Amino acid sequence: MNEYTSITDELQDLTKKLMKNDQIPDGLYDEYKVFRGLRNKQGKGVLAGLTDISTVISRKEVDGKIIPVDGELRYRGYLINDLVEGFTSEDRFGFEEIAYLLIFGELPQAEELARFEELLGGYRTLPTNFTRDVIMKAPGRDMMNTLQRGVLTLYGYDKRADDISLVNVLRQCLSLIATVPMMAVYGYQAYNHYLEGKSLYIHSPLKEMSTAQNILRMLRPNKKFTELEAKVLDIALVLHMDHGGGNNSTFTNHVVTSSGTDTYSAMAASLGSLKGPKHGGANIKVVHMFDEMKKEVEDWTDEEEIMVYLNRLLNKEAFDHSGLIYGMGHAVYSISDPRARIFKGYLDKLAHSEGYGEEFEFYDRVERLAVDAIADKRKIFKGVSANIDFYSGFMYRILGLPDQLFTPMFAVARMVGWSAHRLEELINVDKIIRPAYESIAPDKDYIPMGDRRK
Image (cartoon, rainbow, N blue to C red; front, top):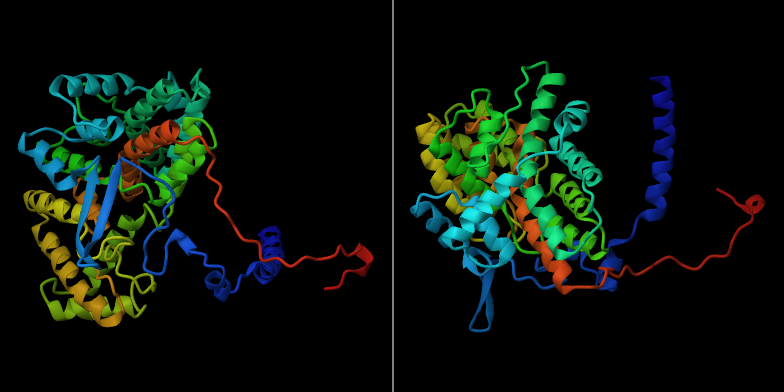
């Protein structure tokens, strides 16, 4: 402890020096016309590339004016609403079908989908002893780090790991889409057993089952689940698959892919980005916020009591004192997040069928009141609405998924989008991505050691 304390004291002093010499005055960003976060003052992203995979629309030009509109998400040009309605109305699981669309650019015919599902089923296996030697022998507390380590370790099992020909990268991507759900669930089972002292369950996936069905089968001790549970999880995975080319983890994949590196390194980099609480960890914040709110608000139907708590959140007097109502607002959407609207409808059915009806109504009430609370306290020019994170964590709780698997489920879905974008980058761009940074450091003359002063 003394050694740790002394090191910490020294590092505190060094950190002060770091802050002194690395702090860049805010005014210089405007002077040099730098868009921090690669977004301009209106919140629009700086154009860094082109993509045909997905697009996000939150505003349109009408009579020469830019106005906010109901949010749209399109995969390969198709409205996400139409895609979800399409496979659900025909009583199909959608993950594999929409993965085919994102990767290959067109909706599959029946025989093409069947062959693709068979292909993924064949890849749904880890190398011999991988689960024992890699996952079980080094359990971690954070499943995103477990996934990163697993993905990078697979590099050593691949005889063509560095081959970036399209056919080989496609093979690697399909293999990762099939096996990342296994690594996520098995990583949690190892953590739960070795670090929490719970029973250990390792269930093999079945080739004939969908991705959503297999996740629930592998997670639950009795391997049982209802059709509705699997269908709602399937829809959640589809809605999380991709979100334009400019989100942080997808842009990371484009950047790393442009260097010519291997697939495992590119995907591990994206996983590291998604782990960040500003990106993939928001739904955990939402459920933890609601955990406290359900204790603080005695009457879940009392809108005045709810509004008092929401104002405490905004005034930094409750939960984590951040001043945020998690799950409300989005960097792009203003009037509505189409994913949240779709998701909420299916969650309504699941919640009431599983005995969570009152809690769902509480979420719905908080969502409605939060819009008014934020509008009253903040200067929000583009509007604010619930995003998909507002409800997704609640859905995972109903399904019995532990908090540790919330962000990994996001990764399971987004592995499809990352794969599509990696392939698109390899096909269309042969230059390494190298953004410009303007140096503001003045020229200095070297000072001999004896002449240096504090």
